[in-house]
Image (cartoon, rainbow, N blue to C red; front, side, top):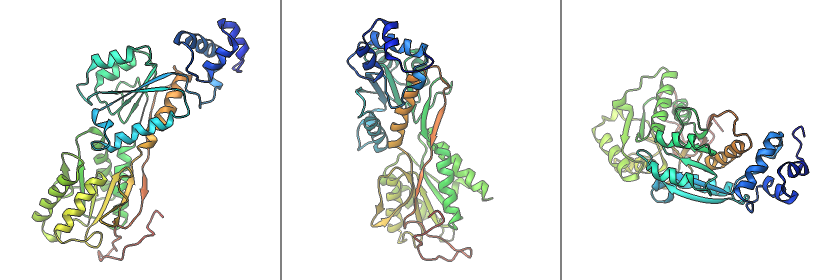
Length: 356
């Protein structure tokens, strides 16, 4: 057939009706697993799958694995929004979406294996699970699987993630280009993805021939919450001589930025007149105490959308190359960062900055 979509020929090869073949290739759900397998095998053999529209999702059941907190917007808004992105990406497909909670590390391998072995689980998306045993099982089960914000160190499974290192590097570059040379990074380093951001931050300092000192330029929190960030930064300001006070704070999330602004206000410091505040997060807050927040938006809704697209490609070409897709952040310039002149005197807040 030379790759042409000839439904009649596939029907003849498989012994199925034309309407059944049409339903399978349209991604409809009202066909059995065995029937679907026969049609798809014939379609792949004849080169038809290479020319099918990428809009088709040729499966009936998809299972999403994620940490327990991902299913509660109050405990992890980032992953919660990622899962919402998956749901939106599947709205136009007739796919039954199911969920299963797994711990990031030391996951319940027996539970994962049981869920993946169910006939209704035709493919899976694994969100934020770092357990290498889970990745090995997913690869060995030979069902289409895509990782989100994690990666398979043995290079068997495709993944889509924010480009954490570049996001950290870009955010720091922006502050340095605005004239800041004493930048305090307020981060939670509970996962390797945040370590990647710190690698990017250090790389930006090196690029500008600036010396990064962990004692002066890095403040580590256990979580991403407001209260802890406010406490940590408040203690830092109280012991920091005014002459060594940072001119800017780069927070690892919007709620950490709230804590930073609260601590600065408690110390009698204004944002951005005395200290600038910038966030790396995902669309959670546009302003803090009526101060429009400059931030780099980390992709989250897009992760789910791109993971579904990647899954489509795995279904169409299961033996295709496996890789990792890294999504860039997006800079939103608002009023919480001041531009500093070369002589270190402060200028007025500039709405039109370097990247406008």
